[in-house]
Length: 171
Image (tube, rainbow, N blue to C red; front, side, top):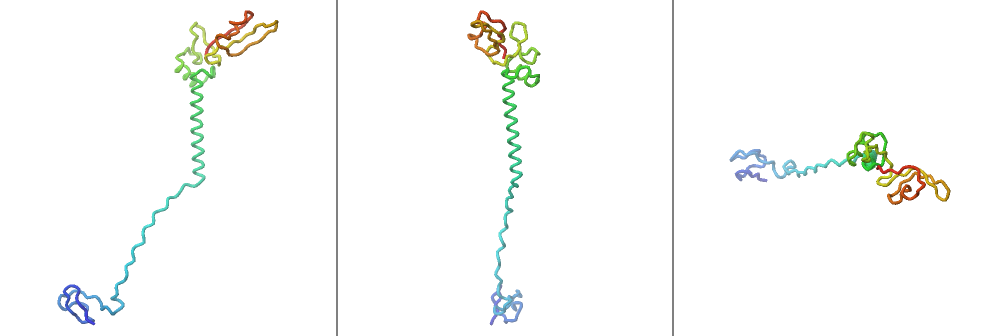
């Protein structure tokens, strides 16, 4: 079987390793097993590293930490709102006093509870904008003790002539 040069096409003997015309290296004869081209195997596709999920316990702990954080934040907001509206009078809490004096515009150095404008210290009632009445009155010859919150029109000092005590308004 003839062996042809791949470069110049000249016919060479089957056992020639180089072309006699141009010197180009010749492939081994087509009949030999070494001359058969080896099928090229495509490289295996690179596997992407699988995304590792966090262990379940880490997810649970992270969720618990977030719940605690948001719970504490909401409690602080709720408490601050209560302080700003005078809901927690006389607690001695400096932060609460600051909130109250900042948002109510009242500050007399007495727990941040402000003044009633008459020069006397406002004692917080816990009634918000209602009136706190402490005292007693007689009704049908029975003594009625009172310690409650009232609107201006329902205050016992305005209704009962036998009223003994005080009614004050201070958030």
